[in-house]
Amino acid sequence: MQKTGLLLLVLLGLWPLAITSAIAQSTSTKPRTIITTDGEVDDVDTFIRMLLYSNEFDIVGLTYSSSQWHYKGDGKGTKFTSEVANTAKRYGEQTALRWPGTTWMEEYIGKYAKVYPNLIKHAKGYPTPDHLLSLVRVGNIDFEGEMSHDTEGSDFIKKILLDNNPSPVYLQIWGGTNTVARALKSIEDQYKNTPNWSAIAKKVSDKAIIYAVLDQDATYQKYVAPNWPHIKVLYNSDQFWSFAYLWPRVVPAELQPYLGGKWFAEHIKFGHGPLLTAYYLWGDGQKLAGDPEHTHGDMEEAKKFGRSQYDFISEGDSPAFFYLIDVGLRSKENVSYGGWGGRMVQSPTNPYRWEDGKHVTDYDPYTKKTDAAYPQTRWIPVLQNDFATRADWCVKSYKEANHPPVVKLNHAHDLRVKPGQSITLSGSATDPDGDNVSYRWWQYEEVDTYEGKVDIQQADQAKASFTVPEDATPGKTIHLILEVTDAKAPHLTRYQRVIATVGD
Image (cartoon, rainbow, N blue to C red; front, side, top):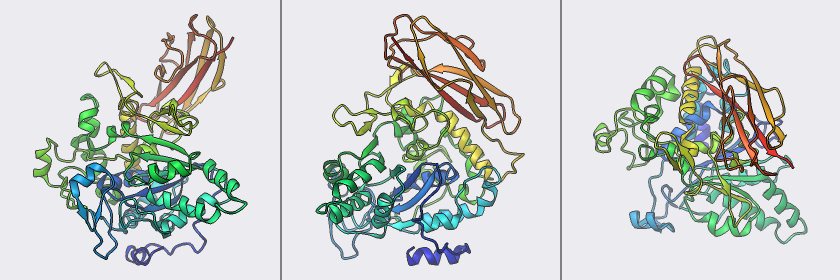
């Protein structure tokens, strides 16, 4: 932990850091993840929401990094011009750019510490504030794409990638990829000319999974892709806009109230404790330190962009951790299945890379068109209701708040079927609050390899049925989703997915 982090611990009055190393092997079956962030306003809001879901995955690293939009400079007055054309044109030569510092994660963990005692009344698995603080490291931050030397952050990532736990490590890239790239370069430098290199390269490649929201520096293309071609990459270039700055352009009007000022004022910003009071919204009067372009808090600025007070700004990186939340959609088995973290398809040129893009579309029932953002947009109501409930967990008792239903199938998740066969679908659900629940079975047509619709009978019941179409040929798949929603507001939804594969 840096000196600044230790000082902040004292200022926040938090208990001392555990003496045991933060690298200690986890026994959790939850997905391991390392977050790298450049500290933009949307990263901060993503971080705040992520803390409310930190019981759903095993955070093993929190790393400050840089990007094309944010870097510290080397303190020597060295001038730098971006390798990315649009930022090079926008900023020209800079010695530092919109740098928010390296204490803001500790600051928000301190606010999390104040609501942590209430959060653990509602769900198991929330990491203690001191454990989260023990995971914070400063990575490669001097310039965009800087990966020329080892840092505390890159060394930490390196140790995780080389540890003896074979479980995947999801590397969330909220800014640039450079600190992860430096960790990989350090591994290569240490082992490439040794007899162990082949085994080490395979071990790391099998373990690391990069979830990147855009390329915010050139290090993936210049270093990672050519030197670590077998590392799995999930690349989000379009769908994240549903939760990013341009959301008014891509979210249907019917869903925009979930991102509006009235909703955020009621469910998030006020009356939900210090962590959510600090959440950034349009016209809220707040100012992000170090970033002169963060003017969203100025109400006059909000009006220029047609925004109302407390409207959502952005959480462009949230899909990276939405993907890790197990709600029964099975998308972590295969990101092409689609889920809260979006839907991607395998690259035709790189079997280790999965991408969204203009060709990965879902049908938008509001605009009645296929849409490249809708694989993410479709989940906005359930995601926002879930967020509102987590906000309630910060201040309410267990009895006062809502909790998600538990959904099960009464048969296998994967079915082997034949054309013309009648298939019974059966699920059940229990609600921890004793609330009534509603059922809905639906076909995720865009994910199917069978190009057609099935007619689900009694789709609003726990037990439903369908007949396999006669034109369904061997090997084709049909994805059927059981969606269960409870009756208490904010309504919470969980799922089970059945994949029916047509046999001979």
